[in-house]
Image (cartoon, rainbow, N blue to C red; front, top):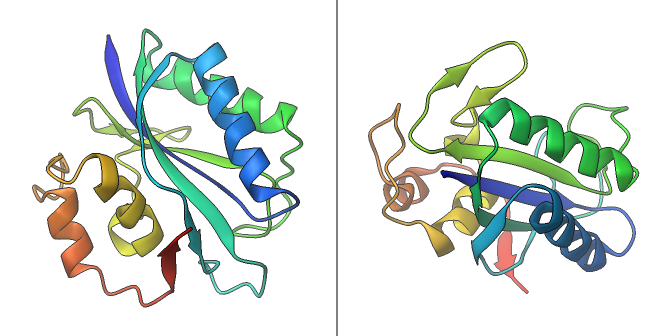
Length: 159
Protein backbone atom coordinates (compact mmCIF):
# COMPACT_ATOMS: atom_id res chain seq x y z
CA UNK A 1 0.00 0.00 0.00
CA UNK A 2 1.31 3.42 -0.95
CA UNK A 3 0.66 6.71 0.84
CA UNK A 4 0.30 9.86 -1.23
CA UNK A 5 -0.36 13.42 -0.17
CA UNK A 6 -2.33 15.43 -2.69
CA UNK A 7 -3.41 19.03 -3.04
CA UNK A 8 -6.69 19.88 -4.74
CA UNK A 9 -7.62 23.38 -5.77
CA UNK A 10 -9.66 25.46 -8.13
CA UNK A 11 -10.96 28.96 -8.74
CA UNK A 12 -13.63 28.64 -11.45
CA UNK A 13 -17.34 28.11 -10.84
CA UNK A 14 -18.60 26.48 -7.65
CA UNK A 15 -15.19 25.99 -6.09
CA UNK A 16 -16.44 24.05 -3.08
CA UNK A 17 -18.52 21.67 -5.21
CA UNK A 18 -15.53 21.07 -7.48
CA UNK A 19 -13.29 20.20 -4.52
CA UNK A 20 -15.91 17.75 -3.25
CA UNK A 21 -16.38 16.21 -6.71
CA UNK A 22 -12.62 15.75 -7.03
CA UNK A 23 -12.44 14.16 -3.58
CA UNK A 24 -15.26 11.75 -4.46
CA UNK A 25 -13.64 10.83 -7.78
CA UNK A 26 -10.23 10.29 -6.15
CA UNK A 27 -11.79 7.86 -3.66
CA UNK A 28 -13.71 6.09 -6.41
CA UNK A 29 -10.80 5.75 -8.83
CA UNK A 30 -7.52 6.03 -6.91
CA UNK A 31 -7.77 4.73 -3.35
CA UNK A 32 -8.95 5.55 0.15
CA UNK A 33 -8.72 9.08 1.54
CA UNK A 34 -7.71 8.68 5.18
CA UNK A 35 -7.38 12.35 6.10
CA UNK A 36 -8.30 15.74 4.69
CA UNK A 37 -7.28 19.25 5.67
CA UNK A 38 -9.61 22.11 6.27
CA UNK A 39 -10.45 24.06 3.15
CA UNK A 40 -8.54 27.29 2.63
CA UNK A 41 -9.22 30.25 0.41
CA UNK A 42 -5.98 31.43 -1.10
CA UNK A 43 -4.80 34.23 -3.30
CA UNK A 44 -3.76 33.06 -6.74
CA UNK A 45 -0.07 32.17 -6.98
CA UNK A 46 1.99 32.81 -10.10
CA UNK A 47 1.49 36.49 -10.83
CA UNK A 48 -1.69 36.19 -12.91
CA UNK A 49 -4.62 38.42 -11.90
CA UNK A 50 -7.48 35.99 -11.16
CA UNK A 51 -10.03 34.92 -8.58
CA UNK A 52 -8.95 33.31 -5.29
CA UNK A 53 -8.63 29.54 -5.07
CA UNK A 54 -10.05 27.05 -2.64
CA UNK A 55 -7.49 24.41 -1.68
CA UNK A 56 -7.49 21.19 0.35
CA UNK A 57 -4.81 18.60 1.12
CA UNK A 58 -5.68 14.90 1.12
CA UNK A 59 -3.90 11.83 2.44
CA UNK A 60 -4.50 8.87 0.14
CA UNK A 61 -3.85 5.15 0.54
CA UNK A 62 -3.47 3.62 -2.90
CA UNK A 63 -2.35 0.44 -4.63
CA UNK A 64 -1.39 2.53 -7.67
CA UNK A 65 2.20 3.39 -8.49
CA UNK A 66 3.10 7.08 -8.60
CA UNK A 67 2.82 7.18 -12.39
CA UNK A 68 -0.49 5.29 -12.36
CA UNK A 69 -1.78 7.73 -9.75
CA UNK A 70 -0.71 10.69 -11.86
CA UNK A 71 -2.59 9.30 -14.87
CA UNK A 72 -5.67 8.64 -12.73
CA UNK A 73 -5.63 12.21 -11.37
CA UNK A 74 -5.16 13.69 -14.86
CA UNK A 75 -8.21 11.72 -16.05
CA UNK A 76 -10.25 13.10 -13.14
CA UNK A 77 -9.14 16.65 -14.00
CA UNK A 78 -10.03 16.12 -17.65
CA UNK A 79 -13.41 14.58 -16.80
CA UNK A 80 -14.18 17.59 -14.59
CA UNK A 81 -13.42 19.97 -17.48
CA UNK A 82 -9.87 21.05 -16.71
CA UNK A 83 -8.26 22.88 -19.61
CA UNK A 84 -4.55 23.68 -19.59
CA UNK A 85 -4.42 26.99 -21.43
CA UNK A 86 -2.37 29.42 -19.30
CA UNK A 87 0.35 28.24 -16.92
CA UNK A 88 -0.77 29.13 -13.36
CA UNK A 89 -4.05 30.35 -14.91
CA UNK A 90 -7.62 29.86 -13.73
CA UNK A 91 -8.85 26.28 -13.47
CA UNK A 92 -11.87 24.27 -12.43
CA UNK A 93 -9.68 21.75 -10.64
CA UNK A 94 -6.02 21.06 -10.12
CA UNK A 95 -4.78 17.92 -8.36
CA UNK A 96 -1.09 17.74 -7.48
CA UNK A 97 0.90 14.91 -5.96
CA UNK A 98 2.92 16.49 -3.16
CA UNK A 99 4.50 13.38 -1.66
CA UNK A 100 4.40 9.70 -2.61
CA UNK A 101 5.68 7.55 0.25
CA UNK A 102 9.18 8.92 0.82
CA UNK A 103 9.99 8.53 -2.87
CA UNK A 104 12.04 10.99 -4.87
CA UNK A 105 10.86 10.95 -8.48
CA UNK A 106 12.33 13.16 -11.17
CA UNK A 107 11.08 12.32 -14.64
CA UNK A 108 9.78 14.46 -17.49
CA UNK A 109 6.27 13.36 -16.52
CA UNK A 110 6.38 13.55 -12.73
CA UNK A 111 8.41 15.27 -10.03
CA UNK A 112 7.88 14.21 -6.42
CA UNK A 113 8.12 15.78 -3.90
CA UNK A 114 6.38 18.63 -5.66
CA UNK A 115 9.34 20.86 -6.58
CA UNK A 116 7.77 24.19 -5.59
CA UNK A 117 5.79 23.24 -2.50
CA UNK A 118 8.25 24.79 -0.03
CA UNK A 119 7.70 28.18 -1.68
CA UNK A 120 3.89 28.13 -1.57
CA UNK A 121 2.15 28.99 1.69
CA UNK A 122 -1.20 27.67 0.46
CA UNK A 123 0.29 24.21 -0.10
CA UNK A 124 2.10 24.10 3.23
CA UNK A 125 -0.84 25.46 5.24
CA UNK A 126 -3.18 22.77 3.91
CA UNK A 127 -0.59 20.02 4.29
CA UNK A 128 0.30 21.17 7.81
CA UNK A 129 -3.28 20.37 8.90
CA UNK A 130 -2.82 16.66 8.17
CA UNK A 131 0.94 16.03 8.19
CA UNK A 132 2.89 18.63 10.21
CA UNK A 133 5.61 16.14 11.14
CA UNK A 134 6.01 14.60 7.69
CA UNK A 135 9.65 14.88 6.67
CA UNK A 136 10.37 16.25 3.21
CA UNK A 137 12.67 13.55 1.77
CA UNK A 138 14.89 16.02 -0.09
CA UNK A 139 14.95 19.09 2.17
CA UNK A 140 15.02 17.02 5.39
CA UNK A 141 12.60 19.38 7.14
CA UNK A 142 9.10 18.75 8.43
CA UNK A 143 6.07 20.34 6.82
CA UNK A 144 5.69 22.48 9.96
CA UNK A 145 9.28 23.70 9.63
CA UNK A 146 8.81 24.49 5.94
CA UNK A 147 5.64 26.45 6.75
CA UNK A 148 7.41 28.41 9.49
CA UNK A 149 10.24 29.28 7.08
CA UNK A 150 8.04 30.03 4.05
CA UNK A 151 8.51 33.58 2.74
CA UNK A 152 5.38 33.54 0.54
CA UNK A 153 3.24 36.48 1.68
CA UNK A 154 0.04 35.60 -0.23
CA UNK A 155 -3.09 35.52 1.91
CA UNK A 156 -4.31 32.06 3.00
CA UNK A 157 -7.30 31.68 5.33
CA UNK A 158 -9.51 28.84 6.51
CA UNK A 159 -13.11 28.98 5.35
